[in-house]
View 1: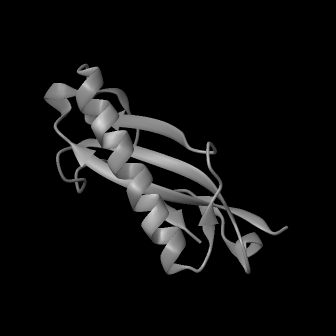
View 2: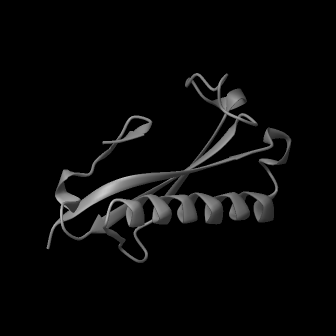
Length: 95
């Protein structure tokens, strides 16, 4: 079975980054984004493989000036299917 990785993204309000329900909603949105990207590439997300990372301008060394809302939730998922081994989530991009 071929496997690879992809990212999904969601952007939110940094003033709400301590609101668990709000961040959970962003995580769901990021997973849906990753799932849509996988579908577009002809692969399938492996259930339960999602890992979330939340970044905000106040606690990150990353340049977030161009991120809408400046609270970024990234979802990394494993994918499977034809060509999946060529897909690698690296840096900010899906390659």
